[in-house]
Length: 250
Image (cartoon, rainbow, N blue to C red; front, side, top):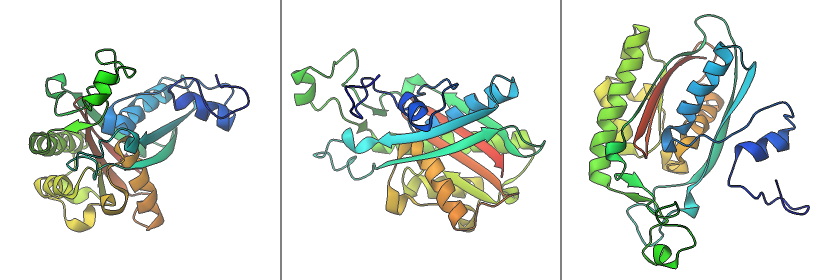
């Protein structure tokens, strides 16, 4: 798994090094990639393992090093993204607590809105032509992405609330993916949420993709805004395109 006595792993994985570091000798570990929606996608996978009895405890980690993949000559994208990591431990709980509902969606027709063209099988990372063409870096069509993101996040959030039979006024806290303030404000307004219901930290951490929601959850908890009994709505949107929303009773 790793080189002679060093901390360098031979595979591009996060799950396996974490499993080794925490000594979870009986655990299965793997990476799930769904861009900025990755944490919520992973929550949905983890809760199903617990519901079926396949696992008693699941550790879900959202981790990103996006600054490695930004083109520092492209000011439309490089100023947006940051690095970070956050985690949640899932276990079975009492009825009416924990993860109440999750909805997720994917639409590959929009895959070119947010992408990293180089680095895969089409344009291998060892190709100098790929690097010279600035392909192994994050590309984003900002105006089109904004429109699709606002619509998708609003719709998926409404689906989750409808499934639970609640309205915006019942939500104690809304933690959206911290993409940018314009998207967050637009989605909050469309959902009919007040500013006090919407949590933001993008102004000092940037867009940390799959780490965005767990990082915000920790900060909200530290501020006393995420306590036992809090009804939390989360929504995320990312490359693929993927989007997802969860309703959680803390």
